[in-house]
Amino acid sequence: MRITGLVGAALLALAVAAGPAVADSSPSPSAGTDSDAPTLAGTSFRTATEIEQGQRATASGSAGDYLYWSFPADAGQRPTVTATVKLPDTHAAQTWQVDVYDGLRRRQSCQYGAQTRTAAAGVGSVELACVLRTVRAWAEPWANDPLPGTYYVRLTALDLPTSDLGLPVETEVRADSKDMGGAAAVDGSLAEPLVPGIAVTSAQDDEAESSDSAVLSAIEPEDGWSSGWWSDRWVWTGVGAVLAALAGIGGYALTRGSGRPRGVPPGA
Image (cartoon, rainbow, N blue to C red; front, side, top):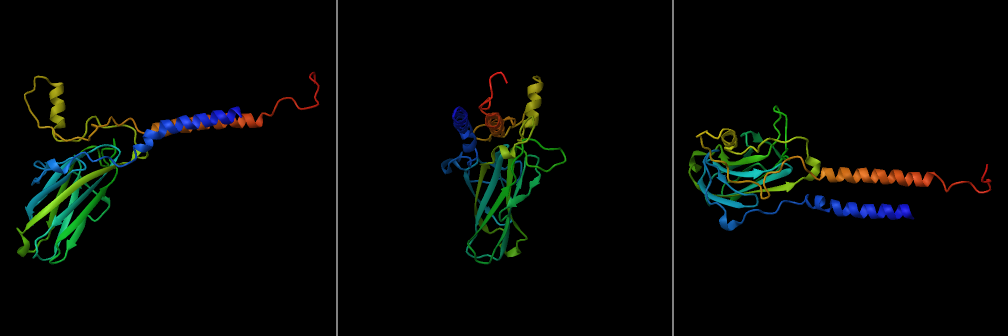
């Protein structure tokens, strides 16, 4: 009975300790609101419009333009980018595509989602989606793994017929992330997130006399950039260690017996 009570108390304490880790696996809350959402899109990586996760950005453009936005994504998050293009009443068949690039401007492949879609002639809108791989805190230099930092969204039409070039379109873009928890954790982390201007800014910190200036990206995750070393994997590792210890104690209590067998004299 004493062993049973000990096991029950330990399991209760572990459940309370692991509670926040389980809660961390839920999708990240929306950081932005539509009231202050941008209504313009950039035309290149350098002029990409910055948006926060959970923010619905809109922009007017012309068929044939390249439209760019950027958003922050941290280690352990799995970003999802959705885009809607509203087309004019009269148009030929159009194929639209959304691409996502990381802070090194490497095009990231989509795990799933309709990254490219064709709107038949006269169709009023087309919807696109791209679910990226989970952002890693660290990766080998030769790997193409998504890393924490700024991510760029590019929306454009492919192989437009001449008759549709310049037609007005309305676009909506949104970026969200799901926290994947300790299952996606890796050892190691980047020295700095991959955001525009971070290299020059770090150099300025090392050289106080430097006169160079850089515009650091103003967007970052709602809770700031993570250090990369902590994850709920540590909690579950501790849970496993405690359960293994309790199992050993329980096994010993069950197999050692109740002491001296009955009928055996004390001096035997």
